[in-house]
Length: 112
Image 1 (spheres, rainbow, N blue to C red):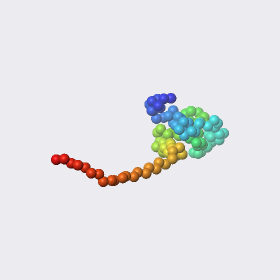
Image 2: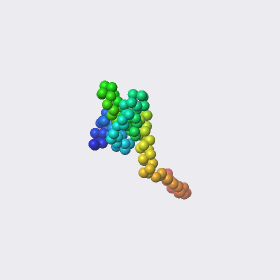
Image 3: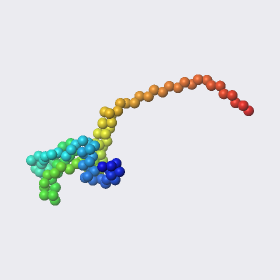
Image 4: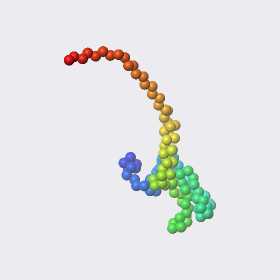
């Protein structure tokens, strides 16, 4: 994808999948635990990295992984900011700048 295509994306599931996989480096899990439906119905959905296993009634209660809502939930978006800050800090050393000035005397001739 180009930068322009990414910037043109609307908030939603497709953008969240890209953030989970490409930014957070969390690919979607390959398998679904056997007790996923029971845990979801009990109010304790399974979370793994950037993914939550949900079972939606209108989709036949079939367990599936969905990404955290990075593009629509500020608390999830802060996780991205923290990850990027951590990665930047690992790659870049702190910058130290020393500045000194020499204020010597200068003669100026002003003609009137």
